[in-house]
Amino acid sequence: MAAEPGYLTEKQAVLTRLRRIEGQIRGLQRLVDEEQYCIDILTQVSAATKALEGVALVLLDQHLEHCLTHATDPAEAQQKLNEASAAIRRLVRS
Image (cartoon, rainbow, N blue to C red; front, side, top):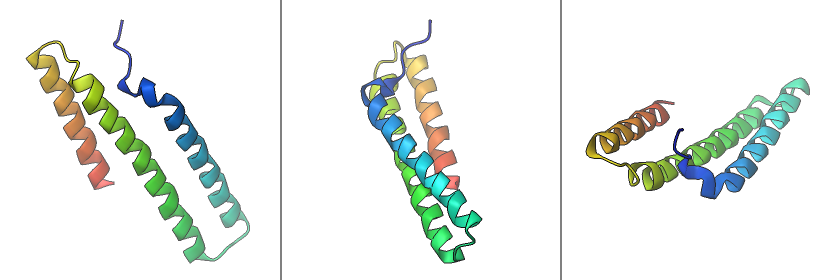
């Protein structure tokens, strides 16, 4: 059985943020459908991107706080650290 994810203590907050982002994306679709001004749409894209980055940071914090610190041996801890490093690289590149 897999260990429980570290974000369980923040699950409701993460879900709330994701639902808000979902609403932002629907709003973006509406702006495009209504042929709104490009800069207004880009402003909303930026807001949605920042919101997703915020969710990613919460998940990363929880991974480091829970998954990494609860590793049962040095090899597992190193694996969790490598996973976090790879996730950070993906976030920075995006």
